[in-house]
Image 1: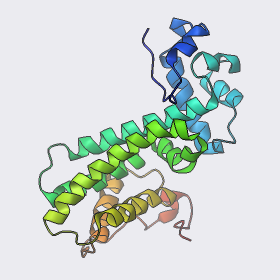
Image 2: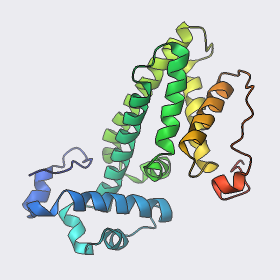
Image 3: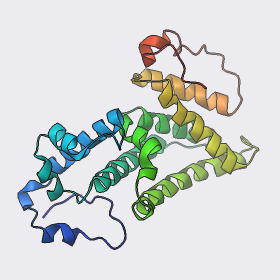
Image 4: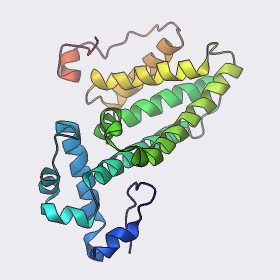
Length: 235
């Protein structure tokens, strides 16, 4: 039986679900529909605010049927987070693929991160930033492995940057500052076009490396149409 693999905590097994008699033809697209519905509602209402009944309704199934696919609301959240992280890392790796040279790879890393953050599954990444800690530690553990794998990808590029003399400070601090700044764009950039993401990535790369930018940064012109608010989201 072809089945997606939601993130399960140690000690759980997929056989537990089969013991409850999940019908084989009730998998696949409907399970993914539940994931997409949950991501939409977790983003809109928050994890605590979205109910299983609302998720089932959004996915077009009865609330009882949701447990043919997931044992709990926590497992749904874990699957949303897993998909968001895996898809995001895949986007970054694709953006880096074939790029050579420390500086070019750094630019590609920034661009890939922003493409993932503001891409088709942007709301999945918002949920990661807000709701990861809503899961018990045993269910966070496999997700944090994915996060550490992504961190390793950053370190590969930052090691190349340090070897080339392009960054001089501590790479751990640099990574935290960079990712924090990139993720914060989710607060003031909503629905950017691919060209705007490219522009943002260029500006962020230059800013993070404290290099001059001779091209005017136009994204904040007409900010209301971009983010739906006149505020940058700054404190």
